[in-house]
Length: 89
Image 1 (tube, rainbow, N blue to C red):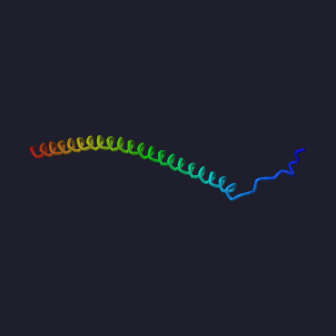
Image 2 (tube, rainbow, N blue to C red):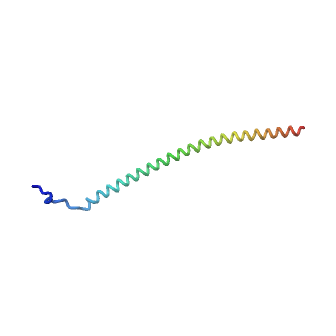
Image 3 (cartoon, rainbow, N blue to C red):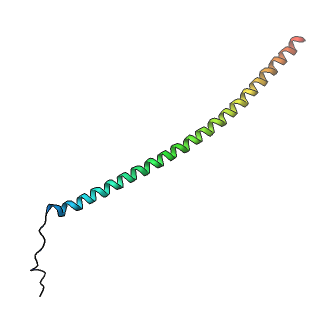
């Protein structure tokens, strides 16, 4: 007869409690590191996207400014031409 009440159980030691705690802390550390790396990668990707957008906007702004400069020069030349015409009369 095998009576479970008569069986000798292993003594409880510090190691039997320490291993689950160490495994829990190690798993939490790994999760924290992976999450931190993931957030860093996402943030850097967003920053790169914003840099590309800003670069495109700067190019568009430069093209608009060039056109406005051309218009300013044309208007200035027309003003001078009109003034010269009025001076001749």
